[in-house]
Image (tube, rainbow, N blue to C red; front, side, top):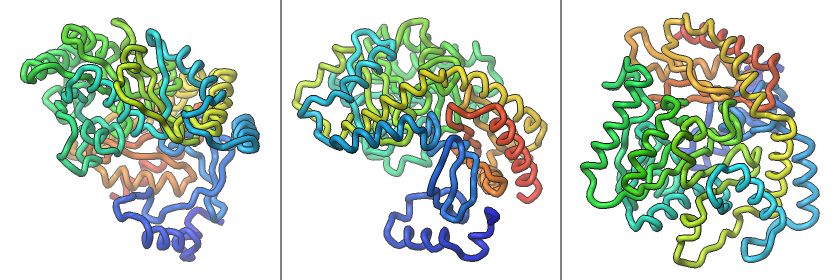
Length: 440
């Protein structure tokens, strides 16, 4: 059956979409004009409920890190499920302790402590709790164009209006420059000039704030923000300023962590000249689809909470066992190096798209690539991005989109993707770009 057949016949996809709309929120968005039902997967491919196969270049929003239905991970989850699913942090939990030890060792932080949650949103919420308590301040610095989750506090530090439905906030957030150049007063600056301008902006912002500031929270590469990234070393320069004021640095590694950039295990390591962050948040890839996330922080910061606390589901025996198996697979197959090597192939295969009038920029690192799309007048083209995702799906490739205006394609396959799959996917995407340009 062709990818389009199920829609033309008013098939099961359409019926399931109607059922979903009847019982779930209207603001819970889906991809595609006719949403698809992902029913199964293997490696880098998924199948929908009507038998159509797709090359997955979005990985459930950068979550399927090692691949779909990895036998080692599936086995670990099944074996743990046969013993016990849940106990909570009130009891000792060997998989959780084993995983915490591994993450602490990999973190690069001084005297690291690990706390597990169930999502990146909750991890960032916890990081804000730690920083504001440690510094006795509700003042937060965040980057423009940022996204840090969908809880009340994490939305309060999200600098992307498309994802922040309320101006109400439990913290006072000031936004600083750090990634976006196109369409701003910083357009056309070199990396060195951009870095100097952002440092001056940070210092000027601090001069206008009253009293102490708790932290800067920043993504090394902005996920929802369309894979916009600062020049390497920018946060090291920021760190010089932050340290003068005693301000903590939180690196949101929900999307960049675990080697996705290819260069390093963590995104912050491209900015390491003045030391590691005080707090790192992680999620998505560590569970390969299991709901596990967390915070690793400097010991004195993590232990500063002056109250009792538990986590009912964070680091459960089931999710921790699966995450351990996933991390084992990742390191045994050196998926960070694969992200570097195959990411370069993918980037090179996408190069012909740079000649298209609608493509303003191809950016990113490793297996985290963004394609920014514009109209003939240079303004953002979200309608072209939407059309490209549709055309790519028709050609059997799933991608995402983001950016402040929704005009950036987000390309992020599992880190185990092969060179052949990268070439296949890139060529389909170029076809989709050309097809979309001709109809919009």
